[in-house]
Length: 140
Image (tube, rainbow, N blue to C red):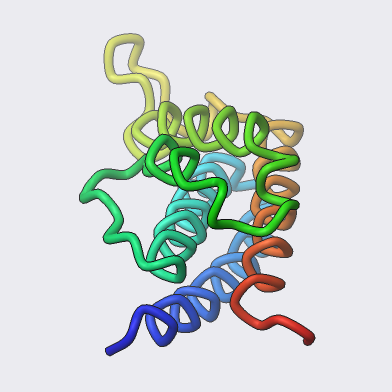
């Protein structure tokens, strides 16, 4: 399978996850939005790396690797580099809490995130999905 085929497959996975994010949001499952938003962003970043011929790292936050190769990405990526890194780091840091909760304080995941957290996560995924789609499907 070529890197382009993988990148296109990841695009479909992210689009499906975005639909799921909206369902979780409508059900007020803001913790699930955070968890799935992280997975969606991770797929965008790893798909982008594959698209430009870089084997992505086997870790959940590949933003640092992507940022080292910004010169190989369209200008929109370079314009949003700091936003990308901040969002990726934040969602990565929150993914465990969104899945397991705060086990030290015995707080379930549903108590740790609110509507604004979920809205920000969805907006971030949408923002970078637009960049990703434009890169892997130019002219569409």
